[in-house]
Image (cartoon, rainbow, N blue to C red):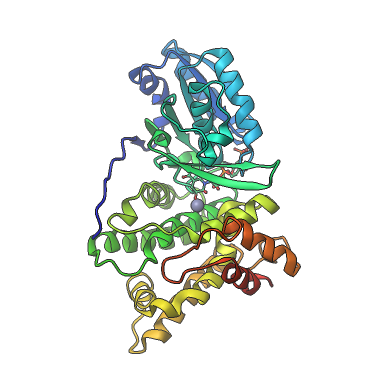
Length: 393
Ligand code: NZQ
Ligand code: ZN
């Protein structure tokens, strides 16, 4: 096991009707004036936004509103929200939505506490982040895990790049998680969430074996749980038990628990972000579309690890390690297809791409071939291009 620090300060408030406690939690956090950040329409249509506002009013907490966050949230929208937060002199940012809304709220909290500093400079490391406003989240989709993660992802449409920022300032103060709030999700979004949750665990799992049994067992248990409950959830999005399991898995999969004591490898995410920046596709779907091609490309460098995955997560048991490793990859890809996720670029809805586009995507994913991805097999731009080529059908 490698050295690690594990500090996840987010208070979790989980269960039915918990959104009614939002005002109380804000008061306990010392909030006086809050910026409520939300997305397109789901939180308004379901009445959630009104319930949240009422809960703030009951605690005499003032608020301003910033709606219209789009999936793959835009830097420019976060910048405009930052200006509003500064103008309104808010001291707390409350996200009501999914990963895109929470990440925008995180960005606004950084921008508002550092007036005059460009958000993208913070994202690229040009400006150092030393303070921020507190953020809270009322979660409406189990997927990105942003409600407890230390990261936030923005898309800069001017330069066509999607990038994440990891900092402890990104950890929300509290996360309110009522699985019933996810009942209105379209099945496609539920499946995107399942794929993303699996991927947050798999990206930490496929690291050369670190003799890290406890972390492995947590990751494998989480994967089995999300796979089984995912099947139920896409058939019946109003199944409280299944939606609860998935929601809790979503937070645990990306608050570092599933990767403690080993390195973190987010290579498939780099490929997914390149696709997301260029084609504006749903994040979880972009990952499912390329994972199989990535796994095919790297598995022979660590057959034991893929064999172990097949045994523990898919219950595979054969004498032949390579055969089991291959079956484990096939089971994963078949599962994505079963829940309605794409397993190649056409199924992702972007069609077969020209070779030149695949090369550009590979350059984006590897920061112009300056960073190598994956620990199992180092991937330079040429390798990533080959992976995109395999997925290009
Ligand atoms: O805008 P509205 O109308 O709310 O619709 C949203 C959106 O269209 C809808 N939705 C959310 N809750 C709903 C609902 N529709 C009906 N009922 C509900 N209860 O779902 C759509 C997707 O929302 P989004 O917030 O984009 O989903 P998700 O949570 O998957 O977030 C994806 C974003 O998070 C980033 C991704 O890259 C992507 O930009 N990530 C953030 C991470 C982090 N901060 O730690 C880690 C992840 O790996 C990921 O990169
Ligand atoms: Zn993700």
